[in-house]
Image 1 (cartoon, one colour):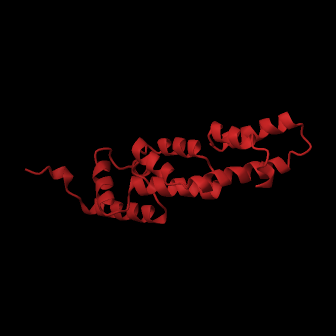
Image 2 (cartoon, one colour):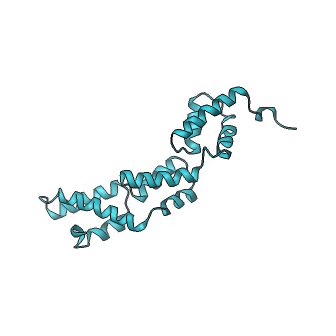
Image 3 (cartoon, one colour):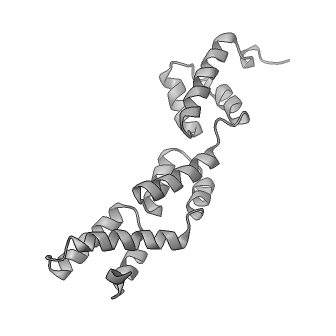
Length: 163
């Protein structure tokens, strides 16, 4: 016998339509939708049902969200993999989907982007003593979420400014 509370009512349909419109505005993950549904006052036991329906209909896809999030933050904000990973964890994206999203970033483009960030900042630090300039470059790259090994490797290249 089916549980009567698992049926979708007309008030649920209105909420589902509202959630669909909200998800259509930009890519969302299931965790973000869960928070929004709570904010709209939906009872906790109703939330999984709506998330499930929107997932089946393709409005919610955590893998797609993770890939688009990683690409967007990398291309638009020049974030590194560490910062992207931490933010995806904050959105409760699984480690597997997070890793797939990070692996979708092009390695050559990733390194080239970090070189450009370091070169642009280095130009503004020409009057600084070399050790102070190096510390500032390291702090900048770390704050953007780049891996320390890559930062040090690029900073140790003598031709960094010419690339």
